[in-house]
Length: 122
Image (cartoon, rainbow, N blue to C red; front, side):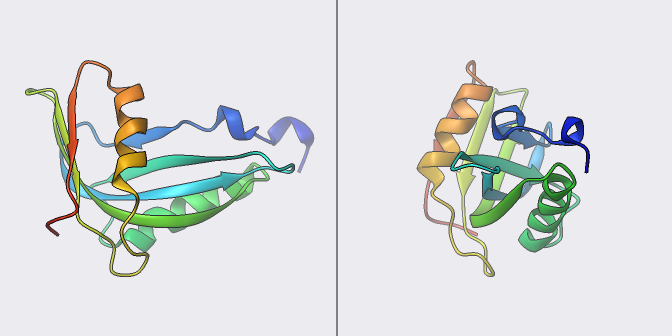
């Protein structure tokens, strides 16, 4: 791959989630060439399994020379008309993501939202 194709860890979007609905999400640690790493949130309604989200994310990052690992998963309930996101649940395959980390990422991306989380629920 040419260097120009390579993304820096910093340029990877922190949050990519669907605009509304209830869907699965994964918390992914992205690593670049050096020691740089950061955690990102990916959540989409098309994913039947948390692994679907992680695999697509890993493929996209690999094309840019980045590696990643899944830190866990859960569900998001995104209600844009109420400006609310609720983070909950877990992934059978990856375990429960640290919802507190996910919530902080979402608060940065959606500053006008009320964002809550709970370990209960599936």
